[in-house]
Image 1 (cartoon, rainbow, N blue to C red):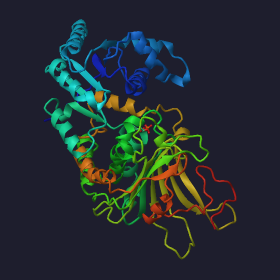
Image 2: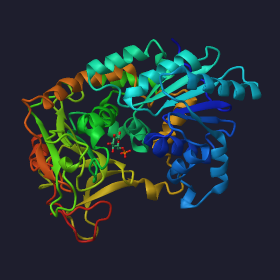
Image 3: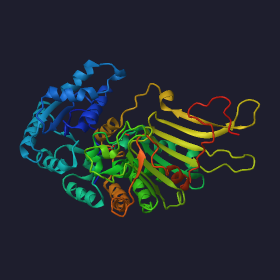
Image 4: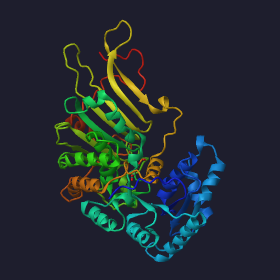
Length: 504
Ligand code: BG6
């Protein structure tokens, strides 16, 4: 079927299901506001909030408003007022009963009749827990779906719990909506630095030429959060860090980082390449992992994972994991790729670190390896650690960097939040930054055997690491085993180097 790339510009009806929930309040509505504030959501848009809760429009507003990002931290009352005029709350009753949807349909028809709309453009955003997700999708199809216009459905993770459940979910969804109508959000695909990967890799000849096993020694994709499950333990305990961020967010980064050059930037061409590289990944070796669970902080002020009353007593849930990937193709054969993620660590950081092979010895002694770092957050930046002569009469070598820090280089740019980017893409009918069904199939095939193992009684218990630390004690050895050379003997600090800090 041909893709529908119709751009939704004016007179769009957006319905947020689960409008009273956390995701809607913290992400969906603020993203809609951000788009509206910046002029990317037309004032003719109508937004319905739909949920089971008994709420008035002003109560919904009270929940959402504290999360809106007002320009320069200032109240932009006029924009906020205008935005809330677009929103109407609809109490829907039980999610699997027709009544609420029939009433909502009447509201749609009222709006469309008033505006003489003969070709409805409707976007449904499912900010819902998995337990009610399918009932709502079925009701949308049964009651709200119209064959005369264009409809799009944005769905949120989790897209299943393992391969089997992901297939079951897909089998239930596919009779309802075409792949073209479904937009599966992985919000990491909306982050500026993740979107930047294509340009960085393929728009720079020197990077493109060295992006392979001949030049690259090791690759790391790292996710660190300085807080624990705080209030989300009940959800997290059945999920663990691997499902929460690795099988989706970090794997998306890894595929964009390692895929071949797509024929074009057309969404299907890009997604074809992502699927290909996923298929080239060898099964994850569960004997080659590092898993941990956070305990109390060393000073006792921060709780252990197991102190959370919403988690199972003695839970073996993994809150830190490092694993390695082998990509069995010509480009990457033999290059170690480590993915690691942890909660309750020493800092907040998501970054990609590519360590190059060392320069040939001879002229140089112990010269540090080049490293390209793409920092997704915080402080979006790209920097290349490189060697240069120390300025002045000295002939020693100094580690320095080529530094592209977004906040200094692109000062006055509006860098949209991930959800703003993705909702806008869905309005434009652009699937590039959404997850395709076959991508899900391959990624679950890769992760399911691994998850089955770490959740089986045979798996070793996760090592306890203190809240606020760098993770399990063996993390350094793990990185070194996978080709990463620690260069901490070098007095290098990014982004500023003080005079006199020489490498040798
Ligand atoms: C979510 C996970 O998908 O991503 C959370 O469920 C995690 O546990 C979050 O904290 C990280 O997103 P961001 O945008 O804050 O890096």
